[in-house]
Length: 141
Image 1: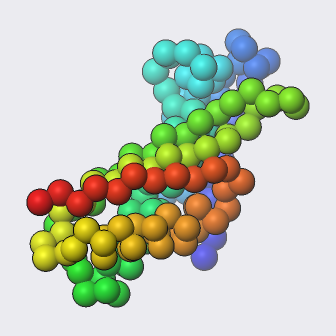
Image 2: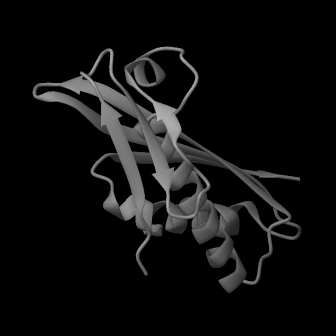
């Protein structure tokens, strides 16, 4: 399986502007630029999109792992906080912190924690990132 996304840019880094689109059309000419990345201008940025991809991937992986263990989630809510830091040669995504809250009838806290840790390490987006990945998992009643 292969999926595509495209980016278009015009101008220099600080005053230029661009758009991002996805094959599915979920994003179509979505604006992005220096101020959407480092300021408060409406639009998106690569870190936000990576966070959405990681949260979605992790949550799907967790759902699968839970199912394999005989548990079905009533709800899984995941937030991915992506850290972009200045490093010697520019900038780098250095960390992603996942926070997941779940409602899973009949699940033990330990079984949920084990499944979440497995998803944290095993989802395809986690595997591709060269960043510190951490997680907090909370089972709600």
